[in-house]
Image 1 (cartoon, rainbow, N blue to C red):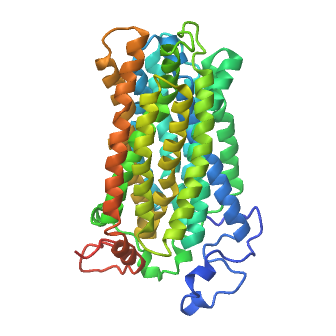
Image 2 (image 1 turned 135 degrees about the horizontal axis):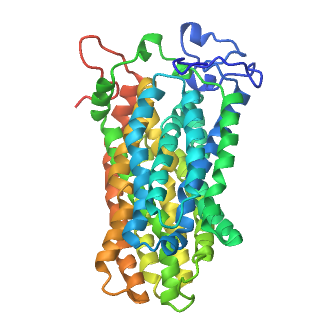
Image 3 (image 1 turned 90 degrees about the vertical axis):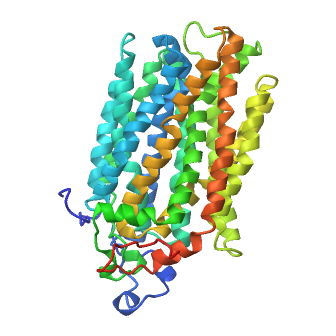
Length: 498
């Protein structure tokens, strides 16, 4: 199978004779599409394999986030091992996000035009090998760890921009939302497992390097599943669009059309605030909780490594639970609210961010007085913050036509990471170092505490962007669903007439 094949007709691992997904949601369609027989599949993928494909993509997404936050789970150990300050620690997440962010448009372009399964397989193989290489970083070469963490972003960019578009080509409407919610469960669960696995493997091996050697083997299993089980679906076929509606346009025209799509632009800015908050908390929360425990006299300072195993474990468990609760509740609330208003999705996203802000603020403030109260507030703050993961992805998919979805995914990744978590961990570290008046345990805690308060303000700003999205969501969705390309002007598939 060559990379240039637009679809995959590889030998099925399972039979393809089950009912096509989405037939009942298309309302029958017209012409040949409306007369499609019971056993045919518009996407070219059977119902059984479509479900299996989503589960495999979910597994890989879980590995992505598990690997991403393994470093955060052992961050105090890394700081102690290399003798670095908060500013350099923040760079570990920033260099990864930057490479991931800048390469996303490349893979978005490729994903809209070439075989997505092959692109993902190559990327995940590369990511697994580089992650394994990063675990052998010697003590005097912190730059090598930074470099390899940057290369990890290459592999993850090849996956994150493409996987949601495959789900979009397998399901429509309510089923698509359900499958996306399953897919995005992997983000908080994988993140939580990253903290848990990182801290516990490091504790058992008495060496943080071993924490980075878990996901590479699991990644190679994912590649085998992709190659031998997943089948490339036909782009846009399940949405019963006439063939001439799916013609490719130039990348510049794609960008021009997306820039006029206000729902896409505003929801991307809202998601940027989510990325800022989650990026900051992901890297710094376990370290902050450990410093709070030292400040309160509950723990001894870090002197021999294995510093934050219990804090990372508890935070990881909270992240897993709140992620599942948040994603599930967000989807359910959105589904019920859609019966009353077509603006339900952005309104739920806005509510999630605005409700998370005060809880995150209280969690940071109460850390100096009560560890239990801090964990309780983090629980509620992360639950509300997780409500938008699946919904934001769904918004993008239904306001953008199929041939531009990978590009849109890539553009959203670039903007949300460039202005969000690419800089937020480093920014928090820089602000923390600048506020620290002495090297005492008091100021190690206090400076990080004050810098993390930026997360609450970012959450409020993101909520405002999602409220603005609600003003345009109806028009942009209708324009995407009724998109007709024009030969005499630049296609703007889903830009609302203003």
